[in-house]
Image (tube, rainbow, N blue to C red; front, side, top):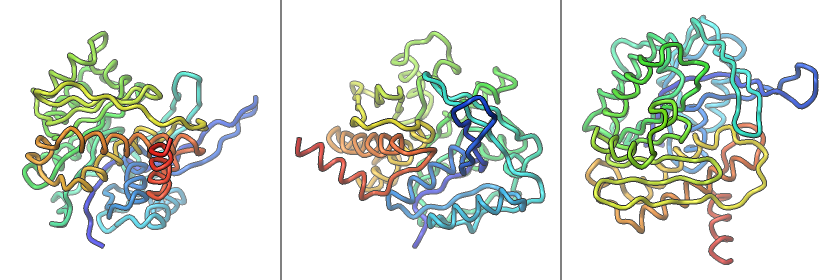
Length: 318
């Protein structure tokens, strides 16, 4: 099965705090881009992942998880450096993170020459934690820029404030990444860190002038809003579910976008810009439904395509 969507980014283990006074944590495979790759694969797309994995026990678990989900790991590098670890505590408003990623295998991802994606690949997702560290941050940007004119690029900053050691430098890096993408997907929390106090509508319009053909801003349970040049904003709300865990919801939403856009035949920037409003509505419903179903599960556990289609069918019948 040929690769259609590629993801480049971190690979880590999330240790989620369990209820109670004791220091008890449940481990889950994680990383924003890795979660997105798993989501896209479960939604039916041929997916490849690019990162560098440790040869330690966590790295072996990460590799096994990718392979168990049918993800092409042919471009994954290996290193004796340790795996990145993250500790997560849920709060009623958001999730709090503590990362241990100095000198870790994924942070040291700096292939030279850059990897070559197969001709079948039409989408690339990039962003998140590796942008806050070197050498991986610059190399991820180099890799995204190298795909210009070859495929469509999705950038998601997926900000973790505790990781941003130099806020002006991070904002400058994000501006470069925004200029390099065709589709920008980010959360209202990302917007608040990138441009505090600025209205979301004004930010989206400014970013559209910087390069992207479309901007998606997510707002958790409130849904998401699509912005396009010369078009009014279009909002989507997720279907109601019993929320268990929000980890991975945004990653699943982003993956759902590229899978659904591929379903619509979007494989280049002109097709993305020309996509009719009705087709965008279907894309947004699919992505929002996938993200909602992820929230009904413990940890980042994206749903299979059949579950998304079943929930959409139920909503249609109501």
